[in-house]
Length: 164
Image 1 (cartoon, rainbow, N blue to C red):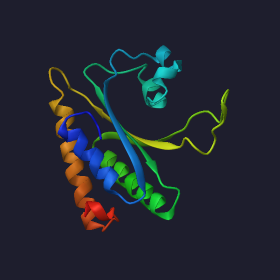
Image 2: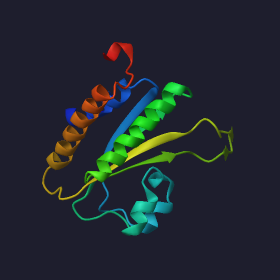
Image 3: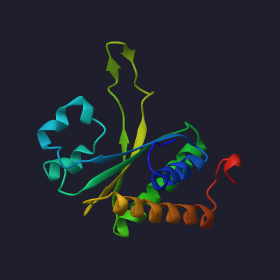
């Protein structure tokens, strides 16, 4: 479970309820101090490089929320991924600055081959006009969580038995 406020934890938990989702990790970051040159450093590997290169780093008063999830290697995992991909696209079409992207580590390391074991997916949400409090970001997450739960019910998306 996330160590972030309940708003972020609820969205995190809603994703984890979906059949086929193995794990979810979440983070909240201020991208303002990140510039284009920093993106080549390994500690920034999890960031959305294409997006940040377009703006040469983070924007003023912008917060970045990321939900990293892993799917089962099964039909249920693919169904969950397809549903999340649709949901994120729909949220972007509705005005949220959000994207879904794959994430993986190098195929080989000094410790051996890891290809086929590191694939995860990132939901990247950018919230601007965050000045004195994270409340605008948390409000956006609350809205998204309500929409995600509604879509799960409307489209009868499979959830784990303990989550019904």
